[in-house]
Image (cartoon, rainbow, N blue to C red; front, top):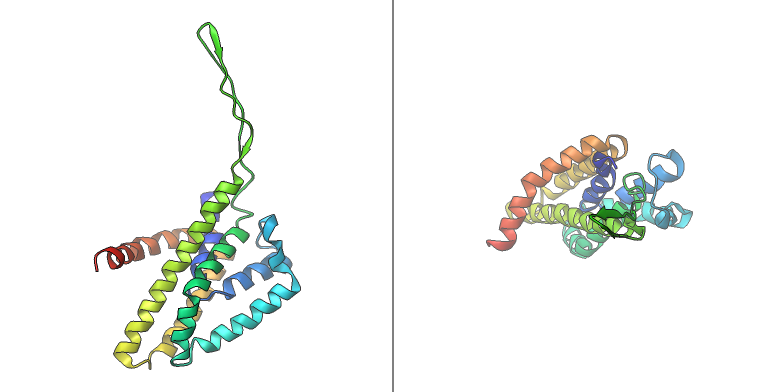
Length: 211
């Protein structure tokens, strides 16, 4: 497994904390028509017509709701749960390329005069790895969502909400950049994620445990 290929599922998950629907929509379109993403076989339903249509409508709704004063705060509050969930789903769905089928194979060893048999059945590890990816995806989306919500709250206090539309546009641009990097340059997205985490995680931990 090339660890930098995790830049695709984790990059899309992080972007989901800013916009719950566009990263998943981009993943579905890229898998169905552009063949840029190899989906986890259990999540191919995201490429169905009804799912893509629903994601497209929700993406449009999110674009406008996030720019209307007062509505944006209600929308963000609702998506405190939705965005981490979307991040978890897109991370697992887009992990087909990054996570090959892995097994622990059986083995035996000879020790002294006796045979010590240490046999492990071929236990599939894929399920456990996908669970880890799901949790990391949810965590990354929760981190970017928390950063977004905190920034919006500070902007509302300082500017009475007048700067929030501009922040929303910047966030839209960031989501598009993250999605494009995740799909076309996963290694760069992986490195960028590491740098972002080094900056945001200490602030998040201090905010959680020392305030």
